[in-house]
Image (cartoon, rainbow, N blue to C red; front, side):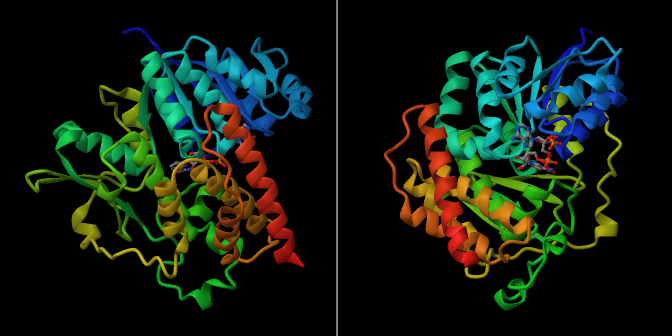
Length: 387
Ligand code: NDP
């Protein structure tokens, strides 16, 4: 069988490393075209050497020399900067992993979609900010979007059991994060170290904070709205603390299909990597006897207002999802730097949405303008919170 040519955007991150782990276990099936990172030149060079990549791209140009030095003698080409990321996304590849965190992933992901590539999408923020543009680009070029987020990957798998027109309801499950049982008062003083400690999943810092505020589920709701266009009123959220059922699809006849598995991102990544076939993974098999019970709760939008903010932004549509995402990125960063408290994350997002109402974006440049302006506004609101 011909080797599948792979490019990984965000190769040094949690999803990127899990993808490389799977590829490393199946070297006869895959070869690496390009790997990218933001600033971690050493980890990028080490991954590029270990997997024999053709090209390594570092987004931050000030880290180019470090990358070149770390690659010296390897014969691996080095490049730097945003445009180099886009050019890497245009290189011939059979499968591209979009695993940059944040809206920074939008340009390369869009470039890969415009080339008609098969894109495994982990980078939910780009779909939240520019969902219509990305889906249109995929449609126009014939690109295939494979969802990697465990919930969306689960829905994708369940949809092999029926047609999207036959769907009555899609339910995204949520662990509830580390503060599922906390009161608002208890959440007021939580630290970044507590917030990144997810009970079930091991993930990057930003998505871990999003899970703790449950903004992650809100972003996923918008993501699902674009990937599976059944209408927002057919998308629901169910808290399921064990993270064993990754999502459910109920069909017209009230038959409900669910996808289950251990909470290990290598399972959905492996599904996307081998699709439409399957490969083995080193993940723990699901042992329902030892798990013993599965619990479910309704999400509490009073304690976790981010869910409502995201649903409202999705309903309002236009620029709102991009504003929600940009303000959230700013607020999460400020919380990680211990500049603001945990509860202020949702407050900053709500205030930014309340103050900024630009016209509906028509193209990618409008999205970047809205993203930029929403970040500026969120930073101003943040200053007010600090003073
Ligand atoms: P990490 O923070 O672990 O990794 C992020 C990656 O993106 C790193 O390679 C980082 O490079 C790179 N990066 C960061 N900023 C930029 C930038 N401005 N330009 C270019 N590259 C950049 O994130 P995760 O792997 O946890 O998440 C990646 C995406 O996948 C997110 O959108 C997340 O929501 C989504 N996701 C993650 C899951 C998980 O289990 N982790 C599950 C489902 C979805 P460097 O190392 O140099 O900083």
